[in-house]
Image 1: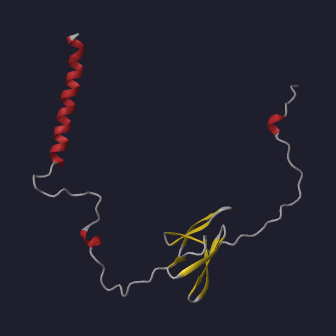
Image 2: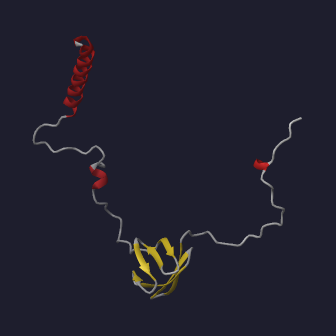
Length: 140
């Protein structure tokens, strides 16, 4: 029985030695601040200079929830129901592809996917295909 434990003890000793070696290189001195390796460099964290005046927030339609009992649009990260306001605009109507708002400058239409228009396509008359998986092939 002692012979069976020797290989396990050797493997455990090698693993402990490897862990000590690996952790010794990663150890930081006592009192030193821990460094996050995923943190961006300090230059990226510094405030930008010369970018001009701050830009006013814009209205962006991010999602719509349309059902029999609710119509909600997520506009610029804010869930808005019909009749509620967001950034000075009142939500008037929500469809599956857009939200219509009334603002101080007039009506605004926000598209869920800008540049894509929904249209109806007529399918050509054709005979339905019979599924081939239920046909048995006769053996010769």
